[in-house]
Image (tube, rainbow, N blue to C red; front, side, top):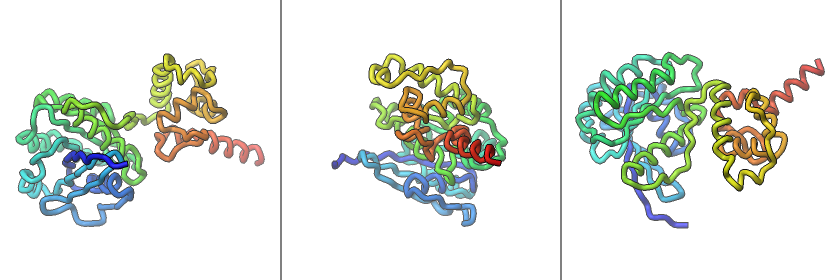
Length: 287
């Protein structure tokens, strides 16, 4: 089916080696490139583009990362840009602190009042995390108030493991469309802040509660959950049969229709994969 092409221009900002290019390449080409092994993006920056099946063309301008280059190329980078993504490396605190001390100050001159600015953490695959989600949320709120701008925090992503990357860019497009008075075109559920089993349980219970008045949802077998189950128990129940728990897990992107865990599920869900736990239990019983 052919669609009219609608273009959205997004600028990727942030310190050298935070993973901006990796985010763009992962979304546009579906591959991971360890750009830290190459020179930092130079000149006026790289340009990445992808056209989705629905006719949405995403133009991603990858900011040159040298500090002087960032200022020289700023006119080119910011002209006609509809949203800005400022990335920081979750294992590098300086890259986080410079969002407020450098990048927002540099960007503020070009920024229209309601243009979306989205702060995002990269490299969630690394065990080292020196910035909490709460701290990043607070920074976004502070910058939004300080500059009277539309600044939000998306959450954690991993270009290497392809976690929350597409969700990030889909959310950006939805934010642009909202500003234009248009309906969201992507159905996105931001799970970039789900870091613990407790986070996932709360998220699941809210999603389950929100579907109770849905007549189609009521067609599925009742879950018979009390609300006090562990994440492993929830997933085991959902994997067992095509019930309401599985329907919620499928809608959240945690499970496939057959009850298996998806590759894009949050890490706590993957850690409690019923098939892996069952295999481990069987192995230990045989020992």
